[in-house]
Length: 317
Image (cartoon, rainbow, N blue to C red; front, side, top):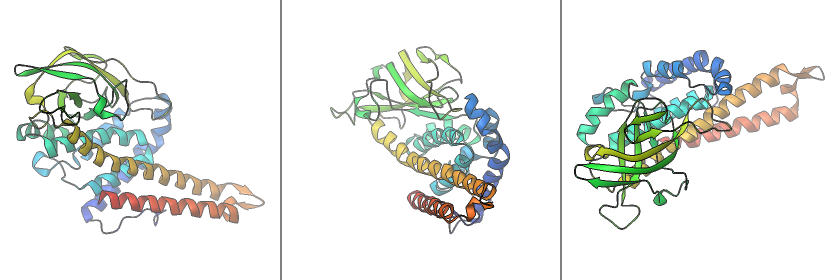
């Protein structure tokens, strides 16, 4: 397996980071993943271990206490984590997207307020665009924030909020109807800091409960409800309303590289297990890996893993 899914031209720092993460995955994640997945248990100790390693600040600029690494480094780390258990990489991805949004679009005050705490993992991010009546049709969102002096009053519901229960900083996309008739220019991103848990987190803002899923266990997925929730205009990402759609699309774009990396990580682990099984299982007096039909299957799997990894790396770069 040492020759599969390798990445050329990495720096010494990148190589060291990946080696450290891989060791952590082998020792702390793989032995516990099945139990946590089947029990739908949030991996608190694993997440805290990643925070201690500095993974939550991987791409946050050094001036804010992060490591200042590239999207490529992040994608390769996500691949390693997903190789152990994909749900953990989901926790990291939501945090990464919010950190990216603040780094690229936040005001200097917002960057100074949030990024240092995000780098240590003390503040963990999540974001929400979807709503109960719609999926990826972001322009059709109904949750609305109405201006009232220096504040906004928010009413409506959001859905599919990954890491919604355990996150402590959530970026919400809502309608504000300010500045343009275009549906793409009347949406605004608000930054809401909250405590972990379910139920009412702030006056008028609640996380009602977890959404039950067939898979992707361990990581929580929730609704969010706003009923007269008041929030200051200074919590608008970037300080100006009407830019939310473009900000969120920027965050989702880099987040999709993580999705590709997760797929690669899962495929790598599946291939590792297939090789292991093929070398142990015997028929007709020899391991099935020595039968040509099985060898061809394994070769095709390895080729697809290698191709997928290469495409993911190119996208990240």
